Length: 244
Image (tube, rainbow, N blue to C red; front, side, top):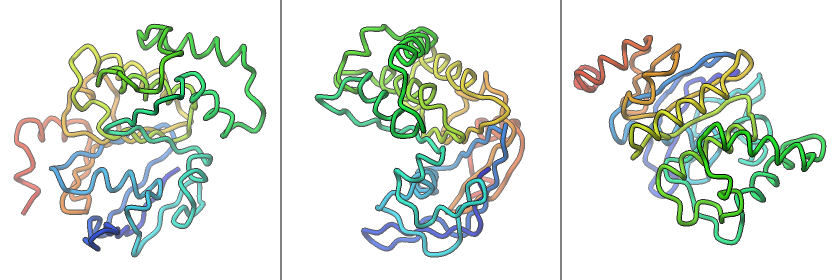
């Protein structure tokens, strides 16, 4: 589904090279995890896949379902079926959660969304995530706690139902109960026809998920790939064995 070959990326503001020949391949039905120390390039990778203008690809290619994404705009990439949750979700005053989700759903659907069906599915998803239905009428992320914002990201994931979900530090700053709810949301989304890429510092969110591959990203490259036991090793020993 996703294939990244020899990806080199710089930060546009200072021309610093961040990704330095990264390779990654994700197939349908797989859950991948990327871990690494601060500044290793984890968030840069997710932003580069969605073509954030703060970053520029200088070499390599990103393929999704066999199509090259390098020169596509962010909205075009999203419409191909790639979703990204943000480490720090933006607050959008004046836009209700339900309006935002309806507009987003319409923008990626070939047919107009049936409003009754959409409202029913939205309520069902909110119930699964233990979200009060009143949140539908609140302004997007305005006044939300950190946990509420992250659950709202998972609500977007379930509503838009992409092919590939990139979850950037979705577990950051969450307590155990919120992490469990987010994990349950990921499991509700996951099936044999889609894939998940989780970018994280910790391992708490992984404990209730079936993970296929864990990748260690250091200094702009993936230096080690393994199964879920690799995450446990990092939890115990940190990255000292991979930073030389």
